[in-house]
Amino acid sequence: MSDDLADFADLDLERTARRGYPEAVYCAGKTPEQVAAIAAAVRARPDIVTLFTRATSEHAAAVLSELPDARHDVGAALLAWPPEPPEPAGGLVVVVAAGTSDLRFAREALLTARYLGRRTELIVDVGVAGLHRVLARLDVLRRARVVVVAAGMDGALPSVVAGLVAVPVVALPTSVGYGAAFGGVAALLSMLNACAPGVAVVNIDNGYGAGHLAAQIAAPPAEDRT
Image (cartoon, rainbow, N blue to C red; front, side):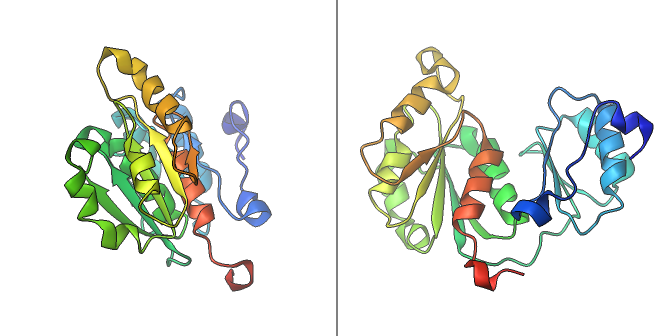
């Protein structure tokens, strides 16, 4: 590790060996120069998947200056390196976005689960204002090992989905909504009070956390892992 990097970061490059999943780089609050130095440090370890989350365009440019092959998903504000996800194993992770406005957080969850080695599918724009839309996707939902549901406003969709499937639901409240949504607090409280059992709730807008939890739930049995 360079002296410059040691001034602000101590990368946990052995996290995969220790607990099965790599460290991610949360770009918010870091300067582009700091993010570039971290990207340079992980370049020597292509065996470790590195996700750069909450990346602005400046952060993305900094990462790509050191890792030009990295995948950049602008909508999810996420970069992944190496650019191709690992060969998938385990169960299917289905990610549901209640509305198009929730899609950026849903995509963060989707890509996180995918780069942690899971098969993924995305369902979009199936909010509770038109229940026929989610009912029309029951075939996909019922193939899942775990379902992530991103929703803002009243945050009702995770409870609806949990009443339709036999697998865990990871509820992802988003900051989408008008004034009384309180930046996602209303959705968060609705999800914490879900009447359907089997709903786990992550923090507001935390697509990375939702995708990570889903990947762990959908992991293959320990004896099948390499």
